[in-house]
Length: 343
Image (cartoon, rainbow, N blue to C red; front, side):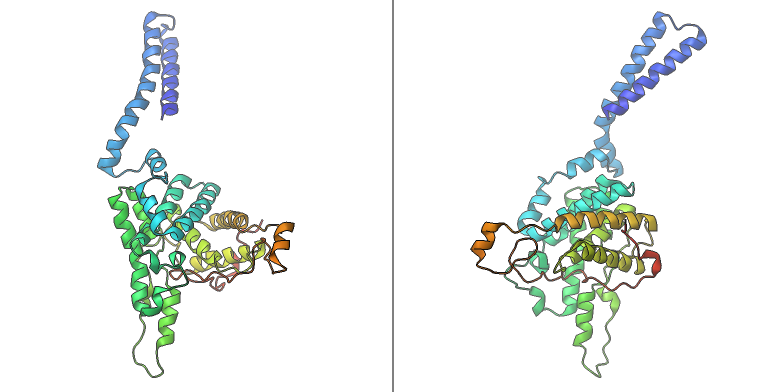
């Protein structure tokens, strides 16, 4: 803000000098006074704008970059509640924010808005954290005792809960819109397929697919589309048993193709060129997260010959996919998206 005021002041000085030359009063006390007042006027305008911006945001629902910077602080009560009550979701949100920020810079979107929205997109899970697999402990899955339709309702509700919490925390309409749009009208395929499997032969009851879709709306901006894509990709990356760069690239490709084919990006401004850059950014971030490590000699001696993975950790069971997001879907798109993210 101060830099903008300084630029305005300098432009005022140039205009006063130009008018002084035109009128033949360049060397005069009046021109000197106008130069001083013009420069000071530009500087003072930055202070006035800084003081009035909170009032403008309050009365007109405008979200400035200054407010986004304040919201990005993870010391806010809403983020502390998320960290304590839903630590798995908190960690997921941090990774999604990193992915979104890098991709937004690559496609010239508002990276600050996208990052803050990614921090906040799943705050609705605070109300029922144990119904989301990233927060479940000891392998206990509460959805095992519920009907698929009830599980679907609980998962869909986290979007509405997130919007309510964002309004209470006064996060701004831009953030609220992205929270509402970050699942679009995606299908909760896990529970939809489970409901289909529970139908008995000859059963006349049919499964309404709309009952297993998020209510939307679909992403309306580039930033909302980025959060949707990063949310799906990060969740699906947990299902990779051996996350090599090639497998990560294939996973990112499949998820983006699936979202694109499902029409979730139809109402935002993301182009095929943007999707290509987004895929490259996601590949880079996820490859860095799942980087391999060398095995230290002392660790090998203590392990007693037990098998270790490429990252130096003992073999463990693969993480199950999040229950509110589909596992890596098959590539159903055409040739137009096959090379997304390729160098």
